[in-house]
Structure formats: structure tokens, C-alpha cells
Length: 135
Image 1: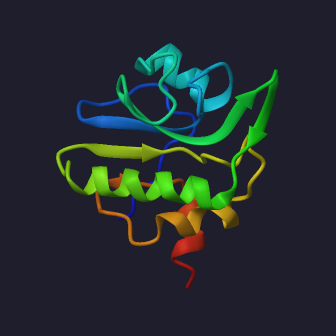
Image 2: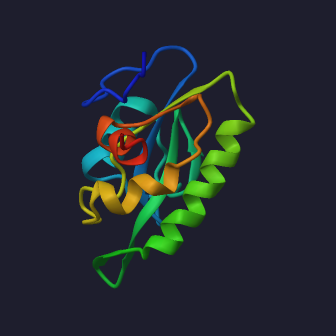
């Protein structure tokens, strides 16, 4: 049976990691980033990689008082790094949120293919799964 990321995620079992879309500066003020900070220990100023019981994948940047969505190739480079990290830590289970599909403004069709070939310890939202594994 295929497991999907719950929505919303309000608690983590031992060994589970919350994977969320962040901004480069690590300002975790809204959406899943806020959940990461409030519930799972994401630290201010950490916009990429491990932070608390989380893994941040930057999808936006903050400069001159404005948020800017990062280009897909930039997000992809961080997803590739994440998938490599996840493959080296098979004892963890990574719960991927619909990162990039909220404030960043991308669609699941834009983001889901980045996770194609993900390791078995990476759990995807149903929308991402359905796009990757179309019947």
C-alpha cells in the first residue's frame, strides 16, 4: 500500500522529517515554513537543508522588502541535493509537503517530476505521486 504525506502534518513519529518549501533567507513566517518553525524546530536563518526535525528546500527569496519565486532549475538543484541526503539516511522517513505550490505559485505538475525516482523513504503528497506514476 502506498503511503502519502498527510495534509496537514501536525506531529511527527520518531525518525520522520518534515520537508517544506522555504525561502533562501530562512524567514519561516507563513505556510508550511511557519509550521516547520512552530512545530518542528526549523531555525530562523536556515533556508536550505536540515533544520530541527525538518529539511528546507528553498522555493523563494526575500530581497529589498519583497519575496521572489525562485526559478524551477534552482529548486530542482535543491531537490536533487535533498534526494541524495535522503538516500544516505534510510532510517529516516521524509514527509514532503506540496512545496513550491503555495506562495511560490508553482503547480504540482511543475514540481512533482523533480521527485521522480525518489528513494523509498521519501513520502510524497498524493498529487505529486499521481503525476509521477500516471497509469
